[in-house]
Length: 253
Image 1 (cartoon, rainbow, N blue to C red):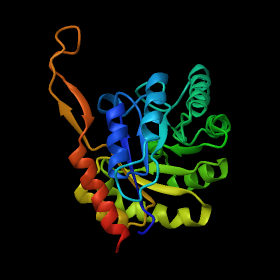
Image 2 (image 1 turned 135 degrees about the vertical axis):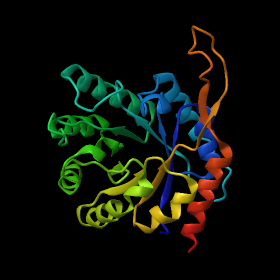
Image 3 (image 1 turned 30 degrees about the horizontal axis):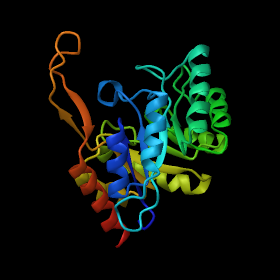
Image 4 (image 1 turned 135 degrees about the horizontal axis):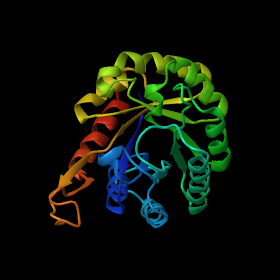
């Protein structure tokens, strides 16, 4: 558990700063996280988050925060048209050129298997940046075969809940994936409805990283033209720090 890392999903510059301050290893930068699981953030937000990540974190001994950009052109499933695949490749190049440390992608075929042609193109577009395959993985029919293929394609890590609605309920599958991943050279990152209280059990499954949003809803009435009283999401610094503390305690064991 000494090398287990923390990744926070964030949607704004403040979230990136909080992640840096608590000593998280990475952020997954996205928009519309609560609404649909996340979409590609704007180019300006990518640049601003990278600038925020370049500031030395408050946490003693913590490395500079890595920014990994979600590349997802729309809500819904992960079977993408040619135009969408081309857009994803272009967004990947733009994110990496802006200084992103990695991208988070996913693409499936109609039968639910990994779209190896699309992923291969995205890995190539990412050049030397890391590539994470997102929770599209949780609907593939054969997770171990998918893990083998993704490792072969050059993907760095897989974000997965173990196929469950919540990662805490998929711990057995996560342990199986973590064991298998050691043989094929790919990381397993547990994510999906993760609370701070779930971190020890997920770490015990042998995963390489824990992913959570640590978000809270801010009440703010936008009126009839702004979604009514739905408010907006932001990163909760207390939750983020509690998650980082839990990870740090595991590293010290």
